[in-house]
Image (cartoon, rainbow, N blue to C red; front, side, top):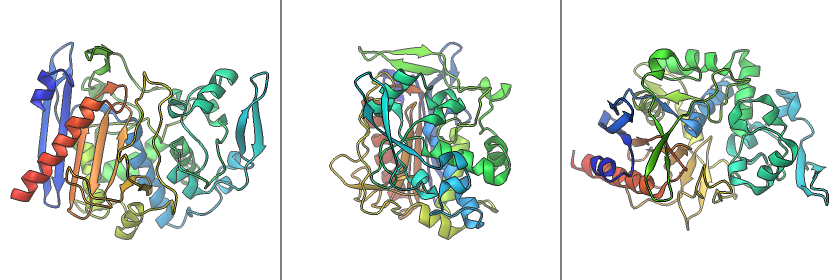
Length: 381
């Protein structure tokens, strides 16, 4: 980690690992704030982007295990605006979008598993063009108008990463009659003692936010301002939250322990097990091919291998050379934050930076180095 700071791979980084016995390793290196020299630590605040999805999935599965939501129910029975979805077929000679009715309704499971037909413009030429033609805002702006996006394929026909988890956030709010900010705090964060997690950042957390950096073409890092909207029209269940490495590992340890940590039961063991199982049948997770390279490189965690999707995690079907077992879950956030959870070996690890574009090859190599080192040290214990 220190070598990565010294070489300019990262301005700062936090790595944390856990086993069944608790925290196995934690370390912060480099600067959280490059202007005032504040060091990286377990209490540094990071914008999670898509690491938020794990919270949203857990919240939804709480409602499922309570019988208030069913995975295969039509989502429009809870969110009427999802009735009669339209599929974007392309664009006519005048550049205007062409639609057709979807062949089947969208279910809750479709939204949880990125098989609904909703996509992200960062990895979609069609949706990027649609936003340009129509002026529809991107989902990251937290404007409700972004939910006017059409489907790119019929529900259930393939896996493609998208805004389904933002719809799940809306669904949680409708069923619980609470904002996502309040629901997360009362049902996940407070029971687990996660005091530095949420959507609306306080002044104390703001002073501890890690500086975002942009990787330049020559490999150098340039600081930039970044903050998720603090007067949002909706709380973005797909990517709007902040947290600290300390808090996020608390959440991962809860999952590693079958839904309970320090006496607080967030999920039942059978619910956690279902979240880590293939939920897309014969479909496979596919490469996310970037069409907006300033935000993301193309992304595939396991090239050359078939991998599946749970509720809501990537699942590697084969053991990984860096250590994790087949059937482990993992995911990432756009600002180059990453985690994995190996329920077979009872190991979880996460690496936190704040950098664009996503899937930076140097950071990914560092993540792999950390994973190998963590398994090696645990094997010696």
